[in-house]
Length: 124
Image 1 (cartoon, rainbow, N blue to C red):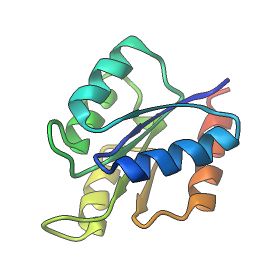
Image 2 (image 1 turned 90 degrees about the vertical axis):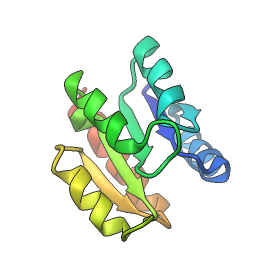
Image 3 (image 1 turned 90 degrees about the horizontal axis):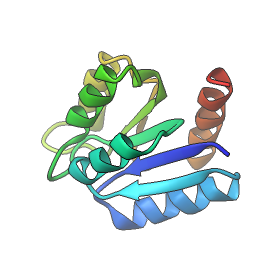
Image 4 (image 1 turned 60 degrees about the horizontal axis):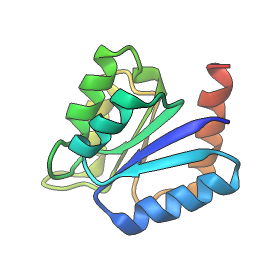
């Protein structure tokens, strides 16, 4: 079974994504910030990591850089609803770190699930 880690400080979004992906047969863990996520991905192996960019206690850029050093940038999906600047600005920066995909919030669940399936298939 493929495993996914979702990192977002929005608990409702984490729950919604977790439910949507578990319905597709994936095993899903969630973390509310980069610090908690790091303790998870250092202990577990994930096929996909979906990370928000703007979060307290370890933002998505820190997560992306850490995972990139581990050789996992091709398994990262970066998501953002914006912050001080637009979501597109944050996502464009994330794309420079070779993430597998970027999505603006609100998320299109069908497109996200399709991209997750594509990434999983490319690693099997």
